[in-house]
Amino acid sequence: MCAGAMGTQTGGSLVRPASYCGIAALKPTFGRVPTEGIVPVSYHLDHPGPMARWVDDLADIMAVFPAGSRVTLDVLRDGRVVKIDVVLGERDLPADALERQ
Image 1 (tube, rainbow, N blue to C red):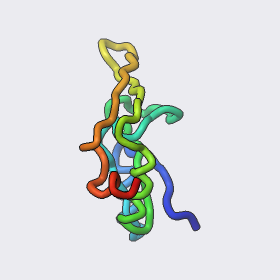
Image 2 (cartoon, one colour):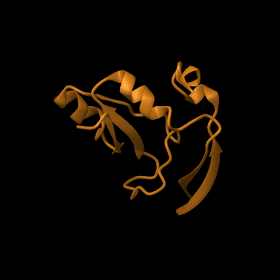
Image 3 (cartoon, rainbow, N blue to C red):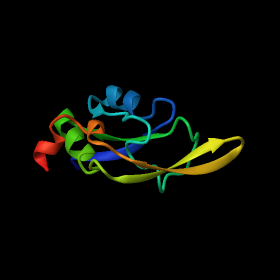
């Protein structure tokens, strides 16, 4: 068994299976977790996020994406894909993540 795994949610593919299996999942704020390397289903709805047995493990997984990380998002604008650079701020982290770093 593993402590956690990453998945993607476009239409409930993280939180629904987690609730059916008795585990925890997190659908983070759009752009909080990079989408690089993920085959897009919908540029505006895809959210990568963690699944784990306990909520504490979700916080540990999310702490891997530290504040100040530069993330490139693919955004659909006027029928074409535009790349936007975003720098994550401290407010995007779990409350105790900075204490654990």
